[in-house]
Length: 92
Length: 325
Image (cartoon, rainbow over all chains, first blue to last red; front, side):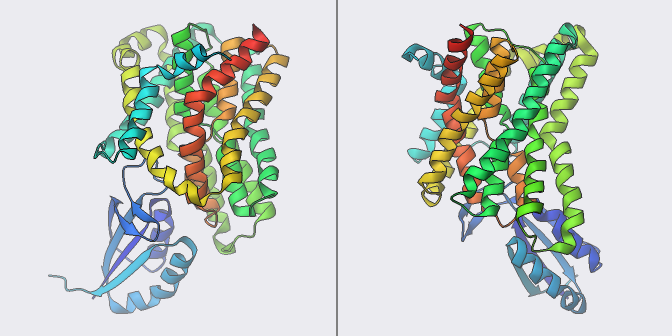
């Protein structure tokens, strides 16, 4: 099993979930207003709008599913920015 | 313009709380407002202003004068992004020009609310229907931004285009602030005098205090964005300072020509001068992802917004008194 973690700007969440849906990822968790440091400096979550706030989406799926989805995920990140981390996972 | 008119606006507690928020960041204080609260304050302000406007509208009823003022509001919100775009194109790329033009074509509800508080402080009457003009002025700039994107910028992702236009139009007309404002306005009209009096303890009496809280947060956010202005360049900073005055002057001239009353003309000028930092930047992130939010957001939030609520309000009021007497 693989764990996919995607950190993107909140405004793009629907577009990312569209990629998930296309590849039949049937479960995911969304954590809103995540803070952290990156190329754009420290991104805080206490903004008046969601324009620059970040969001973390994670899911666990089979290796084959991730391989199918990889191209679309890369294209998404090239267009809208963000980070995607993939790691091995064990589900209990 | 004398110093009294500036002081009258600056020595308003909510405006001073805005500068206190900025000061907290400059002095590296750890002052923060817990995350969900600023969003609650903005919902509160939209409900309060919508309900109040609806209540006043239920008392005054609709008239040709109101339609005339609303029409000016819509025309200004379509005109400003168009000429802003062509001015910006002389110096910057098409994507950022679209996003900045749309940002400056739309309005800031908090600037409007601060303007109303100023009018109330100095005892100048204004129509409750102006809330409707504020709601009407929020969306056209997003649509014009979309049209410009289709005309002048090539989408990198053509297959996504249809769905994104639907998504952005929904963002333009049903974004949370427009939706809540129009909803509250409708509730205010439907429930009239009785409804307003039952809600007044929360949405009337506490209004100025909540505005102070919200502006404190805005001060914190605006000050955090100030360092980003280093990357923006002098042309755009100048644009963010001069365009509000140009837009307000155009609005004042149009309002004067069409016989709009003093208080309403001031609010039309202020709305035309203000720039969006919530609805439009969100829509521009979706429709023009190539534009840099690190440019258009600090311009509206860290330059135009502080300028309008500190010097813009007395300046536009001075322009109004020069014409209207």
